[in-house]
Structure formats: C-alpha cells, structure tokens
Length: 93
Image 1 (tube, rainbow, N blue to C red):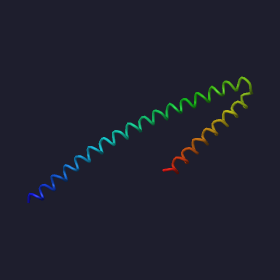
Image 2: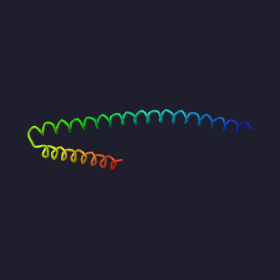
Image 3: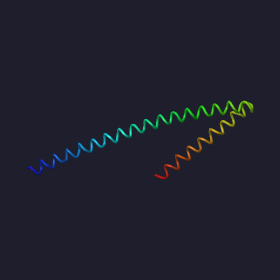
Image 4: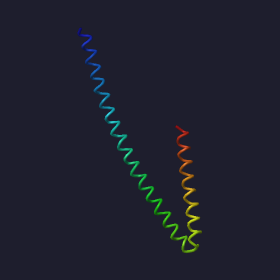
C-alpha cells in the first residue's frame, strides 16, 4: 500500500513540475510572438514610408506614371525577396 501511495505522490509531483515548465515555455513563446508582431508592424510602416519617399523623389524627375511604375517594380522585388526568404528558411527546418 505504501508503494502505491509513493507512486501516486511521485506522479503528482512530476505533473506539477511539468506544468510549471509548460507555463514558463508558454509565457516565453507568447512574449516572442508579441515582439515579432510589433517588429512586423514597424517593418510594414518603414516599408510604406520608404516607398512613399521613393515616389516623391522619383516624381520630381519623372512623370507620375513613370514614378508609380518604378515604385511598383520596387514593391514586386521586395515581395519576391520576402517570399524567397520564407521558402528558403522553411526548407532548412
């Protein structure tokens, strides 16, 4: 009877320890995800400002259609690089 009680107590102690580890891992993962979301928002904002500034500079030297065309090509290039990067990093895992 004592052996059964010791086994049950050990099982509950193990479950408690694993629960604490799980809780800390969930908190770390959540904080990392939040930081990545904030970084993605800042990246999007920076990209938008960069494209707006590029358009403003190009519209000084080109007609508006030409400036929009070049900014559109820049957007496609950045999107292509990002897609390639995501595919490359997902293949390595």
